[in-house]
Image (tube, rainbow, N blue to C red; front, side, top):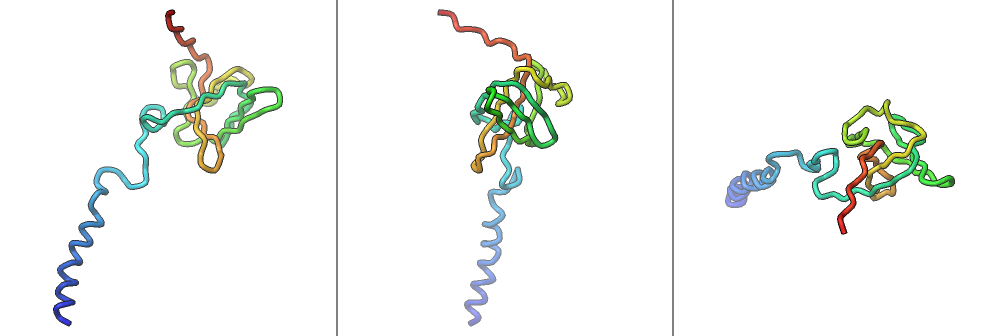
Length: 126
């Protein structure tokens, strides 16, 4: 019986140390985000349309006359006028915008970047 107690007392610190290992640096369960809120290497889908509304929780985008998309605003949601970050209050309702976002597992769309006055991309030379 004393052998079992001694063995248990010797293994207890080893088990406790093994549980703490690997958690140094950042908190577990959190993703490190890169510039603009997207995880490094994460691909974002681009949606173009007319900005119909911005609230504390949602961004409403009209992609055609009969189709509107509702995006959730998340911590990473940023608003840009061209390449400069701008406030949500300066978002031009009724104007064309691009929303870069991602679809969550439950089907919700998350808005990461809301961009208006986007500079044209250079065309590749032929």
